[in-house]
Length: 258
Image (cartoon, rainbow, N blue to C red; front, side, top):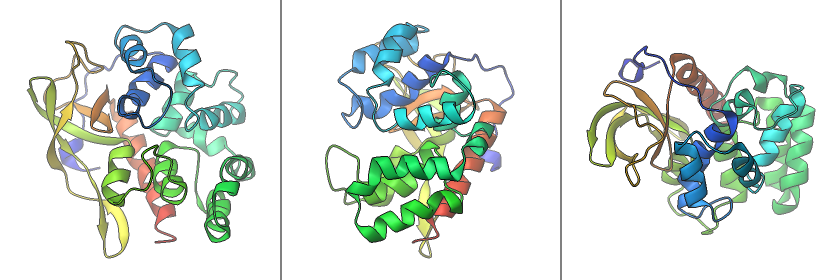
C-alpha cells in the first residue's frame, strides 16, 4: 500500500446496501453511460439515507452491474443482491468473491457476452475465471469492457484513460475547492506493455451537487473512492486494502493477454 493513500483511522459510517449501490452507480449514470435516466433519484436517495424500495427498483435496471450482484449473492447464500456485503464485493472487492465458483462465473459470462464477441475474444473471456477473474467491477472494466465495449457512446479512442475513469479509483484528499476535492489519485498506466498502478497524482474530483455530497463529512487526509471523477464514499482501512488487492488481482488477469 502506498503511504500517500493510507487512510486516516477515524470511523466511517456504513450506508445500507442500496444506498452504497447508488453512490457508486451515480458517477456513470450522470454521464448517460449506464442504467436508467435516474440522475436525480440516485443522487437524492444516495445523500439522504435512501428509500430502499426506490433504489431497489432502480438497481435492477443497471444491466451491467445487476447480473454480477445476483451471481455474488447466490454463490454466498444471500437472498438479497443488494445486501451491503454483496454490493461492496462488486464495487470494491471482498471475501465473498472467493466463493463464486469459476464454472458459475463462466456460465454467467457466456450467457451475457458470447454472442457479442468474435471467437478469439470469447475464448479468452471464457477462460478468464480459471485464470483468476471474479465478478468484481475491476474485472468488468479491465477484461470485459475492452472486448465488448459497453459505453453507449460507442468506440472509445483513449482506452487507458477511459478504463481508468470507469474503474473504482482511490486517493487521499488534499483540500476542498468549492464543489470539488483535490485528491492525490492512484492512476492506471501502461508501462512496457503492461497495465499497472502508477504513482499518485493530484486531480480535481467533483463531490458536491446543490450543497449535498456522498462524502459530506470528508476531511483532508481521508481516502475516498472515485467513479467517473465523482467522489463516491470515504474508505475505511479494510475497504481500501480490499480495493487495492482486488484491483491488482484483476490487473494480473488482464495482463495475460496484453
